[in-house]
Image 1 (cartoon, rainbow, N blue to C red):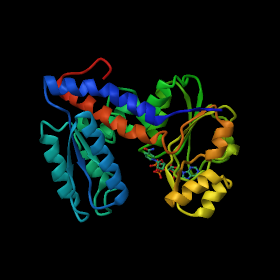
Image 2 (cartoon, protein in one colour):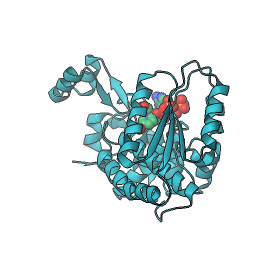
Image 3 (cartoon, helix red, strand yellow):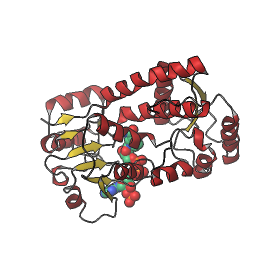
Image 4 (tube, protein in one colour):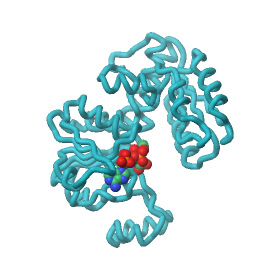
Length: 310
Ligand code: NDP
């Protein structure tokens, strides 16, 4: 049986290690402060923000939520970001994406003070990432590297194939893997012979957003597979096809009315991989844990209380 890379266990470890750092900040200066901006009423964004606020509460990080209406203009949002940049007790500013179409997302993200950019999306932090200098890293990619490190999965010298080239996941995870001395291939929708390229991967990272797309044909026997995709299946026929009639999974579908699957086929990965991240419970939990890490790191840096591990 392959090793299951358990994101919930690693998230709990990371958060337990953060607690004393938060307590020290509270004791010697003040608790870290995170501002979360949630525009409009996107139900998925509301759930993500609720979970982020809950994670802050559990750790003693002070969070403030701002909920401007769906009709906000770019200038109004820029004013809010600038006001938060100026507030001393706010260490991190998170703008939940996507923003409504009338808002210039790039301008808003670029307005965030780079030292408060806990999502790691500001061009200055992206430049630091490219050149391998210290800085705030995008949370999901940083979480993937942390998971591999804590499970002592070797990266240096291995061939890593990343499927997906988004600014949020694919590109930054490829850069982090390269800095960790992997030989990295980045694939996308125009890649020829995708299955053949993926089959050469010792470490396969899937960040595509297509349910169970990477089947056994894409997997080298014994590969380590990191599945970033989170895709909801709400058609029973699709659940039957993907889970090949597995009665337990179909019973779960009938109970919940839907199932989550990643970008890698959930049965084939168990058959082929030496280690893999399950969906759910793999990469997902690490994203929020790394947001907490970035917030604490930003606070320590701003307050001049850097910890050894920070
Ligand atoms: P994007 O849609 O921004 O990017 C998807 C990438 O996949 C693109 O680079 C695209 O290529 C590529 N792609 C699409 N179709 C194919 C194909 N048929 N063959 C090869 N490549 C293809 O998605 P994100 O990076 O934001 O997210 C990817 C997945 O990860 C989603 O399921 C998302 O829900 C999940 N996610 C999970 C997180 C977590 O915390 N676990 C956090 C963030 C995302 P091209 O550039 O050519 O269009």
